[in-house]
Length: 306
Image 1 (cartoon, one colour):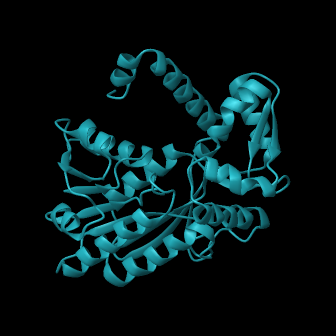
Image 2 (tube, rainbow, N blue to C red):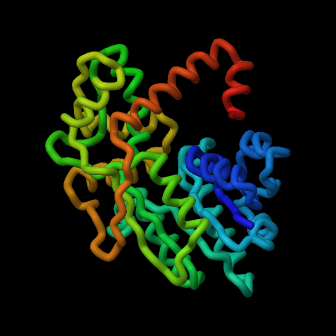
C-alpha cells in the first residue's frame, strides 16, 4: 500500500494517477475536500481524516509500506505556515507510536541544507525524519519552472515577464514532470537506508533564457525583468501570504539571487530532461484550458477527470 500525503497538489495528484493507473494499492490523505471527492470511487482509497491530527495519520499509515510526503502549502485561511506545522507535528507523533515505520520519500527543496527562508522548515522535517525512519529518501528539488506561471498572462498582454530572480546569474530549475518521474521511481524501487538526492533540470537558466523560452511559447517579443525588492512583500501578501510568510519567501529568493542556495555536495545530483520552453508551453496550455473552463464549467469537470 502506497500512502500519498498531501495528495491535493499537482505533483501529488500526478503521482497518484500514475500509481492507480498501474493497478497498485494507493491511499490518499489530504484535508482538501475537492481532492477527496475527485478520487472517491476512482481507484484510490480515500482517508477522510484531517492530517493535522495524529489519529488521522495513525489510520492512514495502517498497512502502508511506503509514504510519499509532500508538505501542504501555506494556509489559505491566514496565509501562514501554521497548518503545515500542525500537519508535521501530527505525523511525527504518529510515527513515534508505530513499531514498524514505512519507507518514506520526502519531497524537499534546495535551500533546506542552508535552512534558508521558507526552506528552513524542510531542514527541520528532514532531521526529524532521519531520527525516526531507517529507510528514507529525501528529494530536494531546484526552483520549479511552474513557479513562473503567474507571469505568463502578463507577458501575453504587456510583453514583459516579471520575476523575483536577479538579472545575471543562471538558476537551476526543474519541471514538475521530472519531479513526478523521479518520485515514482523512488516509490516503486526504493533504496534501502537513508539517501539524499538533488534534482535539477537539464541546465541552469538566466533571465535571457527565460525571455527566449517565453518568446517560443507566446510567439512574440518578451523581456523578462527583475521585480524591485521593495515591492516583493506587497506582491506576496496580495497572493494571500501573511507578512511573516512573505518574509520567508523574500529571504529564500534573496538566497537564490546571491548564490547562497546552491548544489549540496553531500547530495546525489540528478538532472531532469524537460526544457524550460516545454514546461512553459504546458503551463500555457493549462492556463488556456482554465480560461475555457470558466466559460464552460461542464468542460472543466470533464477535463479534470482525464
